[in-house]
Image (tube, rainbow, N blue to C red; front, top):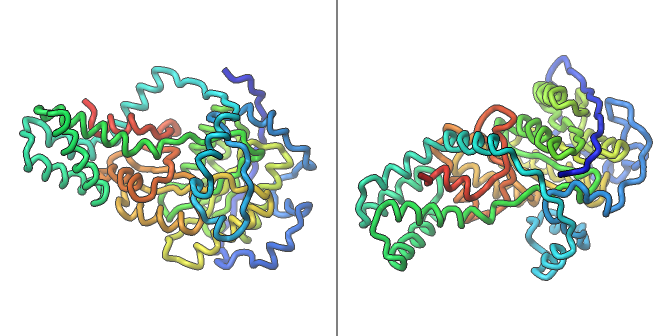
Amino acid sequence: MFSFFKRLVGKTSDTPEEDQVEDAGGLDSEDEAEIPAEEGLRHATTPVTPAQPVQTPDASLQHATTPVTPALPVDSSPAAQAKPYWQGRTASQWTAAQETAVIVPPPEPEEVAKRSWITRLKTGLSKTSSGLTGIFVGAKIDDDLYEELETALLMSDAGMDATEYLLEELREKVRSERLTDAMQVKAALRSLLADLLRPLEKSLMLGRAQPLVMMIAGVNGAGKTTSIGKLAKHLQSFDQSVLLAAGDTFRAAAREQLRVWGERNNVTVLSQESGDAAAVIFDAVGAAKARKIDVMMADTAGRLPTQLHLMEELRKVKRVIAKAQPDAPHEVLLVIDANTGQNALAQVKAFDDALGLTGLIVTKLDGTAKGGILAAIARQRPIPVYFIGVGEKVEDLQPFSADEFADALLGS
């Protein structure tokens, strides 16, 4: 068990009287260059204490939930800033990092809670599952079976690439293992699906920086603000103190929604009624450093990847965060709505190309027939899926497990 000490975090926010429209241009390069570190808190809505010395690396690792990789040399060029997390690091670097890592295992979930989550996951994916599992009932192993499977996988938005891969591997497995029963073929497909999804299974590493800065992006309506509130609660279960930054300065409703989540979780929410998103988030990083907060999460305004001026604003937000803390943001997460199917894959590609995503949060899997989108992501842009959501409650957002997901789709 952990031997953490808990921090009591106050909460504050503002309630704007009307929506404000943000200047899409954000901070220009001259404004960014002129932001002095000691004045970075001028936009904060709550008093802050003077900055204290940051914990030493050894002390900060007490909260780690998975192996923590030692810092590698940072390339600050624009091209490097947009690289996915897996690029630019050799196998020997990763191996050496893992060998020297300090591992503190997360607490095991209670058995009752685990069973409850599995039940909710199966229920949430039932529409996708029914389209796949019904094919095997009383079926013969012939070309008709494979054609029906192809249709079902495409209907679940697994995409042509993942569908062809799974069917080709399944045919080979049936031949090599001489499978003669439809239920055996179903089990083989479940195993292949789990293997395909396993590269997406990666834990969020805590404690490798203080504060650990997380930038959250996504299109309108994907569930960013709600996911941030749920994730804050999840992090608190690991005794992490959290601060939220309301970087969505477009909509007053978004700031109000984040404020409500802050009150529920008893965490501070820094926001402004109007102003530049980058400046608000810059101040939040400074406040988190001064208060020695473990995790700072920055909400951003929803935008479509085709809105080029707004995508450029996101890039500026990322650059300004790096000025507030040179190694930040440590996580750049994209929230995607599973109901959008193949469009979600297009969003992943566009935001990854613009920002260099480190992880995904997949929401609204409950009730959708398009749960196969994760297979498409695994084949075409294998960015880790940190969390999946199958409902509105806080406990309905849980870490992604390839085996649990495959079981929910093709289990007994």
